[in-house]
Image 1 (cartoon, rainbow, N blue to C red):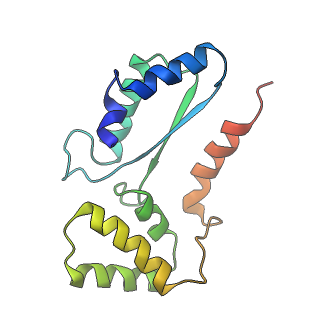
Image 2 (cartoon, rainbow, N blue to C red; image 1 turned 90 degrees about the vertical axis):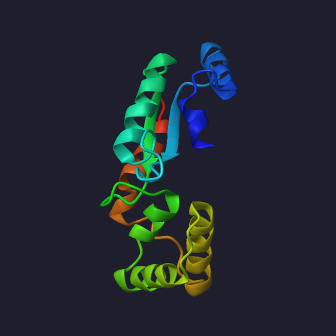
Length: 151
């Protein structure tokens, strides 16, 4: 649940800090959806998500160990992983999916995410996600950095 990311007392943070103290973990990449500001004025949208996750990282004293990546449509700076994926497919395919979602009138965020993913899989079964698309460059860079050895 996204709201757990912003709770200093979240049990997984305690475990993470213990692993860092034991030097079992050297680097952390927080990957979190931006979601939509209109759905959550405090945590929704890219800027709010970034501000709040940076705040909790500072409170937990994890700045030297961590980086963040916020999944969303890079142009609109809102959404979630599925929005990032949708942003990387050809315009014609994207319009087709968006038109279906609009006329189907799905309201629930969870339904929207699941349906978006399923539509892509069904409509384009032989079209894998295009990780060579520039919209994935920042994520790829952060993942590579996560696995690089320190000198």
